[in-house]
Amino acid sequence: MSVAVPWPADTGLAVERTALAWRRTALSSVLAASVLTHAAINATTVAFAVTAAAAVAALAVTAACCYRRNLTLRARRPHRISPVIATVAAAATLAAATATLGLGL
Image (cartoon, rainbow, N blue to C red; front, side, top):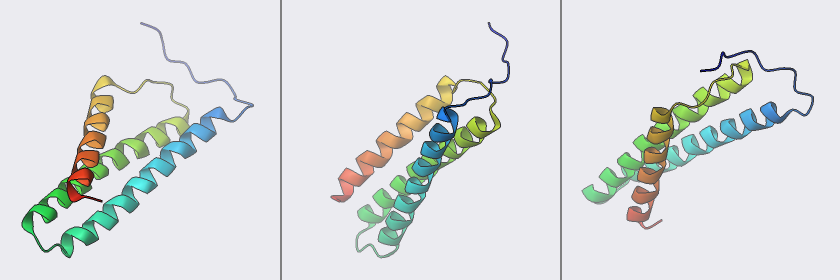
């Protein structure tokens, strides 16, 4: 195992660009979740409302993971994304995509 050391100064701003990308992903997840929440509230069928609620839950997990990664990058604490977080984020993304396809959007 290697010892974590602070990242050296980055003159190319690669870390900043990556952190901003994670922030954009989190914001787009929140926006998509709000649109689906509105659709679930105005749903005419129970299946539509349940599917939209599942997509909102998946997007909320995705947004939380993105926000956490953004904070980690901005604090410049060099640790990898754990396999558990990566698996949860992948499952949440897959669930959101499946729910969106189920909605027919």
